[in-house]
Image (cartoon, rainbow, N blue to C red; front, top):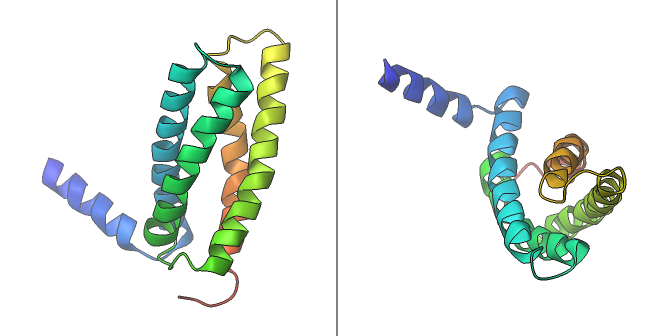
Length: 139
């Protein structure tokens, strides 16, 4: 039974349709979010929350770029696409910081706020990054 489930997931991940693409995007996003949050969680005990959040974001960005290009959209990370990805993430980073400040301002604990930030920003980021990797050449 588990082998059938595993085989079904593998087939789904290998398909080139929007549903599979979004599933791959979600897997990459969760991986990047774990990296981001782990770094943030360790650092916010020692440095300012926004600085800790930014350092985590930068580290997760590099992982995210590679995995998004190769795994999610099956594209090479050309200089042009990397610049577009960086541009999308500058916008995404600004959304993150504004949302983080908002959730902290309303009294949410600094350990919990990033989960709400990432949940909202992920949806916006998907469309920004998809545009970058789907525009222009197919491969």
